[in-house]
Length: 245
Image (cartoon, rainbow, N blue to C red):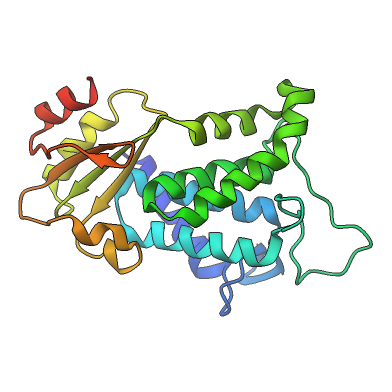
């Protein structure tokens, strides 16, 4: 459990020191000073990390920050013609050519990670704008994937997640020890096609779909497939039985 506090510490450091007053993510920090506009990869990988962190701890501020940064990424990097993202922002130094990197080498490309982020945000929030943006990005990748699939392994993983099926699990109730017991069931197995949301009372403020979930003192788990939710369960054992079906 030492890794989770370390991850929160890292995310909070970036939030406090590498995001300016306008919400722009920055790329460099040294001796108490931050500078240089972040690139696509900075946005994509930080959003990915925030979504992972939210899955692990359920603190809504991390999901809210991921949503805000995704909107900022759309404004700064989106290419509406091709459907992909530029590597540099539209507020960066003007270049003769703005590159769009998609090849997954030793590190996945920012476009591949963004593809996965959008698919995941769609499943978490139910917002069609993320589904539509992911679909455009998939079309952007299509020629390259058909020509040489081994060069785009992260994009293929994102495509697999986008196409589904993906389960959506909502833990509705306060973040307590009971939530931790439910988490232990969720994380005891590798579940790559599962997104987890924690409806602890504030989520509906920026994700409207959660307004319909009741919040009681006892944590209840709702498993949703194809955007239809099953009857909630309120114990780790019942949740395990539900997930293993």
